[in-house]
Length: 128
Length: 128
Image 1 (cartoon, each protein chain N blue to C red):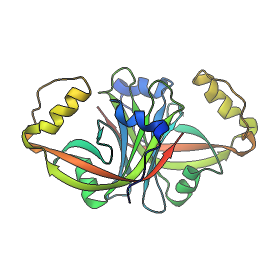
Image 2: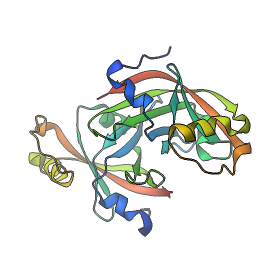
Image 3: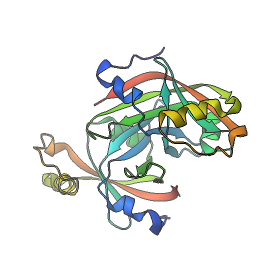
Image 4: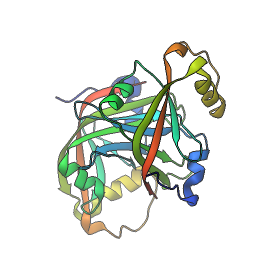
């Protein structure tokens, strides 16, 4: 079941904010990292590489939670809890490039061959 | 064993930044929330209340991870993984008031009677 994003906080998903993704390690430790994201009105997508720790965490446990804090009002945030739905190859790093455009940066992508797209399904929403 | 904070990123612990605390729910879902914090050179402390979800999560699983992103350079952050060491009553909400001063805000504290201090021990450090 996909959760509905409340209209009052939808802007946080639409604006290019650096968000915070929580995953669980095999050791039981929690991992929290800054992440770029994009929302298509239903699911959330992230860029990643096959070699990194978060990818290994998610293979072990697909639970993921994204917290997006309003940089202009730190009393306001959205917390999206869900799970990893799919991992796809990012052919030609095209998805990564679209995120670079969204976040207004541009640089070489040395690991273009290893780039993947993580798709998250949102199951629960909390907000403040 | 307490981990050492690298000098290059120590400012992130000293500045009054709103950080992101990750905990694990009994259901297996990850919880990520904005949090105030203070660092005494060894441990990290948070203000909380006995009634809230994060408190229940931590009773179940003491693993906690704090991510602090530099608001002036989103490519720079500190990730501190560790565990809850202690929970103490915040007498007179004095600790909460000290955090209000640190973060430059002041308002009434309606739940002063339920206020607690969470102390975190840092076991692993990651940075970028």
